[in-house]
Structures are given as structure tokens and as C-alpha cells.
Length: 175
Image: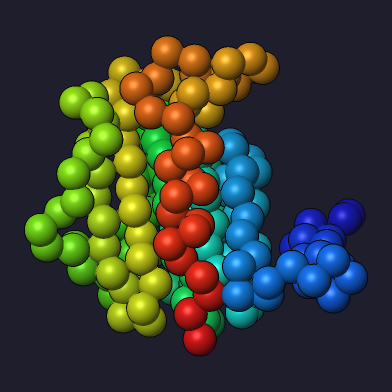
């Protein structure tokens, strides 16, 4: 019965008002269901998040079936998905819907991939947001680069925390 998006909105408001966080640099990241929630908050908390970082999570479920279920203001997205993740096909379908609905087109030339076993696709959307998609070959449902924990991917060729942070620093909120 809890309203997770309202909680995230209240928390972000507290951080910007009380702690003086830069409102143009409020980001959200998550893995698995937390990644799914990041997409949901990007849509439902209009104008709040500059970008989201999603690892082994996606844009899917009943809410996303409505063609107008997209952010009303730009929210850039970086996502990291393992090709062996059991939800890989679902994640790919969700990303394709996100990009189609926001009229995203591939950036040319494509930026280089960070490792031989990682593919990277970058697109720019009609609203000015960016979508970076990293697919890690032979990786499952993990956080690449994490050394411990149930979703650790210590042997991955990239460190998700670094990829997400670099993306965030390059993507303040667009108005």
C-alpha cells in the first residue's frame, strides 16, 4: 500500500531543500526491481530526476503498456544489462518501447565500448534526453564490479558504479 514514488519525491525534496543538493543534479539508480522503480519514478515524478541509472532492471509491466507512459520532461537513462540475464528479452523490449515513444535516434558515430565483451549503444531523444545501453556478454542478473552481496558481479569487464556516475556527471537536468 505504500507509495514509493511519493517517498522518493519527498526524499529528493528534503535533500534539495534542507541539504541544499543541486536540484538540477538529482539522480536515481537501482538494480533489479530498484531499476524498474527508477523507470517508474522517471515517468511519475515529472521534472524531478535529471537521469536514472538502471542495472539489471527495466521498463516493463502493466503501467508501461499505455503509449503515453513516458516522462513529460527529459530524463536521461543509462542502463547495463547482461546478455545472460533471465530478463534480458523483457529489458530489451522495454528499452525499445521507451526509445520509440521518446523518438530516440542512434548517435553517430557510436561511442566506443569500454571492453571487448561489452556493447554500447547511445541515442538522443526528441526531448533532448540521452539513452546509453550497455550489454555485457555472458553476464547474468548482477551489478557488474560489485565485490560482495547477493547480486555481485565481481568478474565483470566493467564497473557499473563508475559507468553510472560518469553518465550522471555528464547529464544535469534538461528543461
